[in-house]
Amino acid sequence: MESNENKRLLQHVYAELAKGNSRPLVESLADDVRWTVPGTTKWSKTYVGKESVLRDLLAPLRAKFATPYKATATRFIAEGDCVVVEARGDVMTKSNMPYNNAYCFVYRFAEGKVRELVEYADTELVTSALGDPTEASPPG
Image (cartoon, rainbow, N blue to C red; front, top):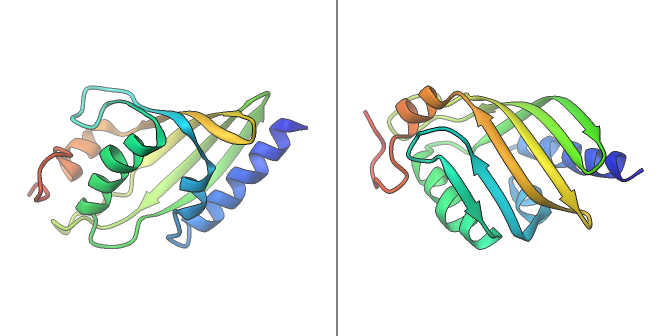
């Protein structure tokens, strides 16, 4: 039953993300969440704790975007304490480059909150569209 509840929660999160509302996603994160971006990009690392996710990942991302970030989920697979979501992003960067990445997110839940998240995406697009998270101005 828990996997169905977690799946329903993420279906709601992505219904809101499709409208540009990221609040339900942020609210679903546990205080001690671990968000991992695999790869070798400047964004690739594990962000530990909700405060770090907001400050070191999401705030620098928002600073790169000229339009509200939207994401549309195409598939949800739930088993045990994990939910896998395939999704497509939709946003324009300040350098006038579309950043419409394809994602596979693996969420692990505990006590109704996202405790761990691994974000698989096109790392070449991450680098070309987003550059370095510490740069004030976008690439291009």
